[in-house]
Amino acid sequence: MAKTFSLTKHRLVFSRLFTRHRFLMLFLFLLATLIAYPYTEGHGFGYYAFRVLGGLIVALSVYVVSFGRGLAIVAIVLAIPAMVQHVLNPSLAAGFFPIANMVLSFTFDVWIVVSIFRRVFSNIRITSETIFGALCIYLLNGMSFASIYGLVNDLQPSAFFLDPAVNRHTVPDRFDLIYYSFGMMTQLGAAGVTAVSDQARSISVIEAILGQLYLAVLISRLIAAYRIKPSAANS
Image (cartoon, rainbow, N blue to C red):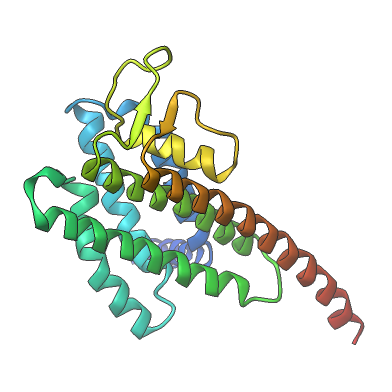
């Protein structure tokens, strides 16, 4: 009886910690995805483990934005194509349905980003969860734009050029596009990957602008919050 009570107590503690630090958990999973990408080539254990990790991130994203019943329902509906995209990874060459699935999966990413953004920047008091929520938005933006680049690359096979001097392959894969996406968002550039088509260049410019605007908004929001906090304390 005592053992059962202790187990129940530990479960409650874990549940509370998970609920209070949901943004931290999502950030760690997203970071783990970036770390695991180089080890998922081929069709070995790493490949399938990475697919499972992608499915867990989709499920965790739904949990993170489930602040209300309406948000939860919309997130669950949009999570279905996102789960198919991350777990099964259908080839866009197969026809209309894989392309439609990728568009719906991207819609899910946008919904998650907007929901977290509204939650994070509606709080006046800055906490560690606020910071991790902002970091989640930053990582999700980079991965979402990588999906857009992937769609452009599949529709236009010559949209990107990989310099053979620094690449071992000529066709960009998912990790190449993620590398390029974060290079554009941080304006550090992506050595060896060049946008060739007008559409790819246009999206690259948009991502670079949004990346800088996001940092400017984030910094100004944090400064404003820290200015409000002393005033509230004095009152």
